Amino acid sequence: MNELVQKVAEPPTAPSRTNDPARTMAEILQVASHEFADKGLTGARIDAIAAATRTSKRMIYYYFGSKEGLYVAVLEDAYRRVRQTESELHLEDLPPMLALRRLVEFTFDHHQGEQDFIRLVMSENIQRGHYLAQSKSVRQVNQAAIETIAKLYQRGVAQGVFRAGLDPLDIHASISALSFFNVSNQYTFGLIFDREVQALEARNQRRANIVDMVTRFVAI
Image 1 (cartoon, rainbow, N blue to C red):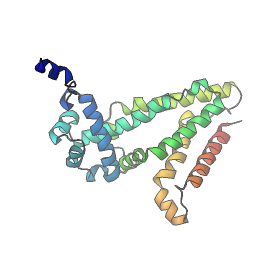
Image 2 (cartoon, rainbow, N blue to C red):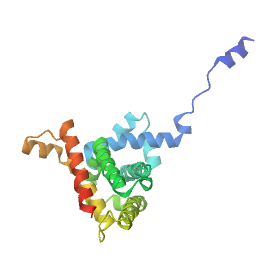
Image 3 (cartoon, rainbow, N blue to C red):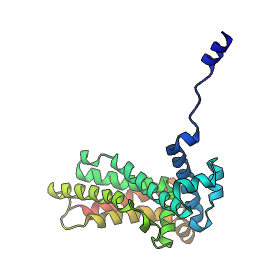
Image 4 (cartoon, rainbow, N blue to C red):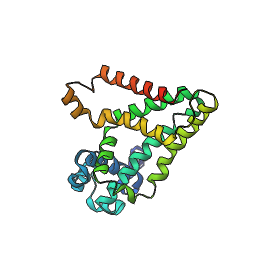
């Protein structure tokens, strides 16, 4: 009887890490993302990632093959997550101008809130895109961003609110560049011009200005 009570009272055993590879890989990617963003490919240490995820270097190499393989996986995951969130904006349900404003606001807010993403992109540009070129999925994943803008832009042209003759890729580049700078150059720009660019008031004003610039550029 006591044995039966004991068995009933015992909570179910949680799945071990080895039985949940998807969760383990996600945790490794999360920690590795910050490590690579903070220290770059050269400075990042697999030992530190293994310790922070309570796993082993051997398991990390088992999942990702090498330090460079993990770095590429981190880049892929960073782009995949931003495009996934972007797809959840449901821009097709909004009028074209409002949808464009929403997209610009989202991009600015994402870059502001996910500064590791900016540092990863900066780091890979220092590498001249060498490792990202090894990715088999990054082009396809990011093509969705251009398709989204193309559809939005075509709707705006058809409804007479956007001027014709613009390149959706160029619109994307403008949105990205304006949003990217406020994070990538925050320290040098702030020091040179003695301005707290990350102060809430300054950041909100910059956000509004970028939305205004992009919408005025596209509008008739």
